[in-house]
Image (cartoon, rainbow, N blue to C red; front, side):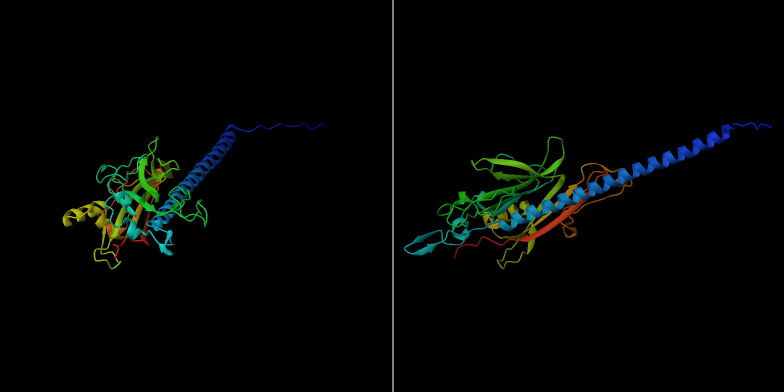
Length: 317
């Protein structure tokens, strides 16, 4: 007896169940892929903000420490006696704000091609400050080439004066915030080129807020009694009827606050309607200097640094 082979297909219900199971697998895989990419993007953005914040802090803090530097080795010999053109004898009597070791402006915009650091309250919309740092460079022993110990804000090594130092020999570095061509806020470094012109270069992308206050030492004991911004220092000079430089020379410390934002938004970071999310670039103790960022879903991080000045200009005695 010959057996008959039977072919058996699948029913419509079985096909539908298989399709449903396949659809569940595809949907789950798609959700996992989207969630994984979102997690990767979130981690990448957070890391980018932290890297930018660390770099900005490193550069700004290093430059402030150089403020007012001068090589106190004898510049020349006069009848066998070393003559030192130090900060105290060279610059303490100057009334030019550009001769200060450190100075700045509050709520300002800054030109990228001149040697100025802006004027107070020329850009109240952005509310960003500027900072100028000046110092002498240092050359290799017995040579005119810089030894690399003193650099400007872009990292260019600065040579020391060739002979007896003058105010014009000092290096320049400026920090300020401006918008790039695509509208992204950036921390800029302005420096003097080798041919004597000034040029600005993008230093850190995504810097949304740059605020500066100064430790004011009114009694000369080396300890700041108050923290003042550039507007406050100008008001001090006006109330005393003196030159602004006299008040700037009483600055013994600098505190800088920086807010960095991520390059793209993240929908999960949207705030609840009515919720406030103020940031304090200079710390909670400076609550009057706050910043409420737009609700755009971007990561933001605040870096605050305080530096005591090493080379404070004192009146010559």
